[in-house]
Length: 620
Image (tube, rainbow, N blue to C red):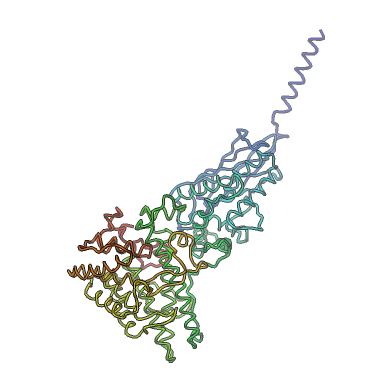
């Protein structure tokens, strides 16, 4: 009898215990989880999944689902007798690309971890910061650290990886439209991750950084990738893209100075004012003294140096004249593989810095031509020579380009120019250099240039146009001047300054304290090529053998295009001329195994977007 009573009591206890654990209307807790999913904003219909996690951040099996609206907003109503505490959000969808100003071509996945126990209505945003910290948070919690401490530590380590120190934030509370410090940090990191990448490349780069941060510190291998991806971001355009997107959605937003959280020049510090799309206007009164004119000319050459270092780097990699198994940069590897696109950072930088320099030169010429100072005309000739140098490089890179020789009358003036044929630009270059050569002095200090630099660039222009006899006349003037030898061969050079040079230029191209712009050896190579093209083999051999003797090689008695090409490559390695030489000698398509259209670069997409008169090169 006692046994029966005992079993009955056990049954009653178990029955009521089970009944107590079964959810009822009184003990079910409603929880509403809302938020935004942003890269730029995810588009309407993106899938949002919320996974319930236990105290060790393992999944319990409970999943809640929702969809985003056209601003990336979502709302999920959940219920559980226990109440949600830890959750993982995972979002899969297309997003607005702030770099291109268009919707993404493929979906991406972003995640977030959050503690939602403190409120019945949790506001949790999902973004690249929540995504990058997630794996580190999981590892810290698994080692016994509390969730809140793990979140704070992971966030500090994440910001350190992007050189952002002395800042604390909660990524799940940030939106890119908040127009505050936290929004600026989010957009800075987001833009660095995306910089010129396709959707697949972007996802891959995020995964690499996220995996790298699992142990708490960014690796030595990953640091240069972040550095490279921080360079050349057009923050003005990115802001406009985001504002335009929200305007399409019927919402007005302001975007802050997120560029202050980006290392824009590779010096290891954030806050560089590395991009200025608005042209700086030279105050006319400033040019009343020669000293100030020289200062403006020096600043202009610093801008030209920015263009030249990227041009040298691009030329060396695209022509495969430097061979590196792994560039530690998706963009440089793409250039090496001839797999560039109109959004490539280096293409944008080449175009932008060239026209920024030209704008400065145009202003200088315009103002000095109004001056009655006796030195003013000479500085006009310096400026015209440097402008011709830039335009010659540009037609080699892009073919037809806008020829801009006027100065904006105010800082707010925007002039759209059409492209003209490269033959017209070349005619202009030759006319300018013929004029300045006759006025420039024989010897001058930097930042001025001599008549022989003008004559050197003129020889390049004639070689480009296949005017071999005129090219020979130019180099003859330089040779007969007696001012240069193969032991004292610098005709013009720019100082290499680490404050202005990029990390990859310094790593693979820079040769010393000066960047050679034109050396006497190029004069002899030009003479050898021009003489060969005009049928004067003996003269061509004489020039080539003079170079060979300098480096201890035996004289040769015959000449071919291959010998000429090898001489150019050997003597002027990584000085910005190899791709142009391959093209000029008709060897680029064969040697580089590229289609014909890749002999010219694509016009940057941003230029086509901003200038309604701009057209794209065929094939791109």
